[in-house]
Length: 167
Image (cartoon, rainbow, N blue to C red; front, side):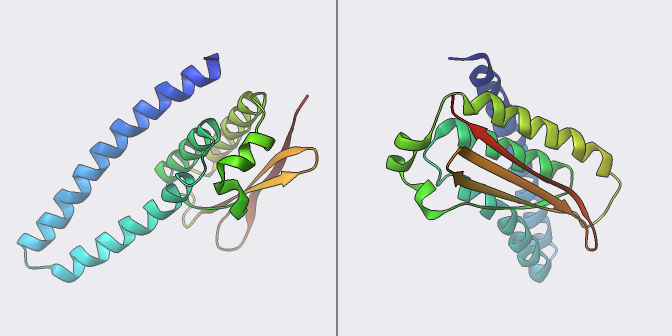
């Protein structure tokens, strides 16, 4: 196991603990609203919470574990900063056979570094409201490409496309 993979495993456990804590908090909010006979508020809260989970659920469709772990970490951390995230990737990336031909171990360190750079940039936007991020994964002839676009309602704050080439 590489050093980056060890870090990813450690981070995944940390995110699991965080999400478990958040999950329990969500249940408390829902139960509190229901006990106060505020079923509409409980339902609204459940819908909002569920919509955030959909993007994380998409990550589960990527059978390449290192890529999925890196993308999950990026989504969770952007969500923690109040940034709503969407992710999009081609259907073939959901197939294990695709990754047998296209995945290269050297992508791990580069992709992990790219996400760290994106998260460092996100620190600048901490006080801005209504931020959204779009993550795109592409299969390019040169290798795997990832693009992150962060914007508020009017302005693109960050747009970086990185291609990870196999050696």
